[in-house]
Image 1: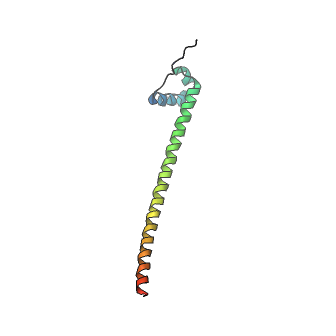
Image 2 (image 1 turned 45 degrees about the vertical axis):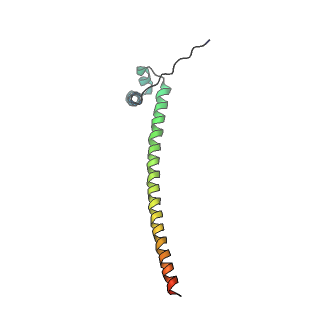
Image 3 (image 1 turned 45 degrees about the horizontal axis):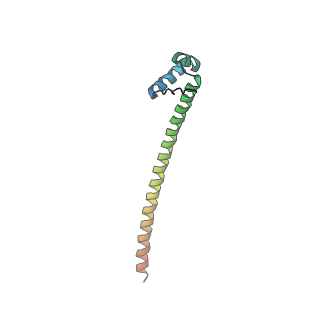
Length: 94
């Protein structure tokens, strides 16, 4: 029978500090000091970079959505004005 080892979880603060340490002294040295695997630090770094690029992309998309909503509101206003003008001129032609 094999026994399962419980997977150790780390807090976001610990991961952030580990990444800062890895930037200063290198991933291999940081892993030795913190008694971690190097792959853990690399994975944390990749996840952190992916998260930061995702939030930047979300900001770009939000700006684009706001721009498109303004354009839609302007076009809806123009359409309403044209409808009123069309009904006005249609009444005067009779």
